[in-house]
Amino acid sequence: MKVGLLTLGCDKNTVDSERYLAELLAHGAQETGDLDEAEVIIVNTCGFIDAAKRESIDAIVQAGRYKTDGVCQAVVAVGCLVQRHKDELAAVLPEVDIFLGAAETDRLVPELTERGLLGDPLADHPGVRVYSGDLPHVRYLKISEGCDHGCAFCAIPLMRGKHRSFALADVVREAQLLELQGAREVNLVAQDLAHYGRDRRDGVGLPELLESLIAETSIPWIRLLYLYSAGLTPRLLELMAGETRILRYLDMPMQHASDAVLKRMRRPERQATQRERIARIRDVVPDVAIRTTCIVGFPGETDDDFQQLLDFLEETRFDRVGAFTYSAQEGTRAWALPDDVPEDVKRERLERLTELQRVITAERYEAHIGKRVRVLVDRPPDVTGRAQARAPWQADDVDGVTRLAGDVRPGDFVEVDMDAVEDDYDFAATAVEVVDLSRGAARPARAGRALPVTTTIGSFGR
Picture (cartoon, rainbow, N blue to C red):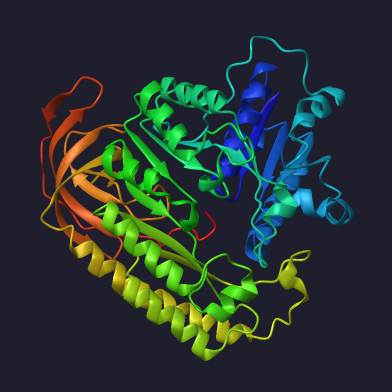
């Protein structure tokens, strides 16, 4: 069986898809990127906001067309959107043969086997993860599932359930597997990394997990994504400050800065607390890059509330901010609130916030110019001779890229001189030398002229 796999939404979905693929390959399936030849098409859906839901449904409909125009025998919809809306989807998407929610992933192989599309396992399981993208040196490691936070706007607990931490030994083994598969950067993901271990009550938390990853792997870059500021304990901050393999980068969703809006959102922090924690982070971890997320147009958000958010962003000066307009999600606490901010006002506020942060990001990025920085190469030189890389403050897919000319390959770590900011979010750099972190050696990179680049604003859904 040839299987085509479409993954939508966040990187936690990417992890799930890699696990599906590993199990399917163990049963003799072959992955294909050409949906025209796929006999089974699996769509891993996202249900986070309305735009993500529409994208998922469009992808399912498109997959269904291959049952007529291609050789597809079955379309499978899995993941978060299905977890919440299986019955509604089944009523309007007859082209889908199998619906499996995020909590039913163990049924994928049995369902396909029952339909005669899979047989018995042909070989030992190839591992808990099989990579299917184009950046095998950049991987994601999910350390827990679900969420215990009660944010009024968020449906994730309805889709993923309560928070459950994975055993430390299992996480470390998976990290070791990713390293064997070529990972040079591993991004830790969860709904809230800082909650890791709280449910297991064995004294193991995020700092202990990080220490184990440092001791038991040689992965050069470990990045923390999705972490509430309340969980940034002194021990965790000191570990970040002292361990060079843990990148000085934090993705911390704040969502708003008006106390009135934060209260209605059922967020655990208030503006004064946010301000104090950010100051503490920057004091303990110099040069840390902080990314956050904001929602505009939440029910009851006044002009004054929004202005407080803008003032806070200007004062705090995050390195990057992802923002989106509020959309009511059925089943959440905010569903009962009147969605009283007009759509045109939401869009206007989003544009104002985005423009303000564009200027702030450009100014913060200017501070890197003239410095020598170690970057990770993602893509080889193109026809213009430029390779694509990322600095420590540039997370995959959302924070822009660094372009450089030189004799470099994907997975290389390269010392570069930062020359210029291009289009607000990207950098032009000159390669100095390629560093082999596994052996401590280096080779010169044939440095060329650093060229300007174009940029796209990253996804807000990560």
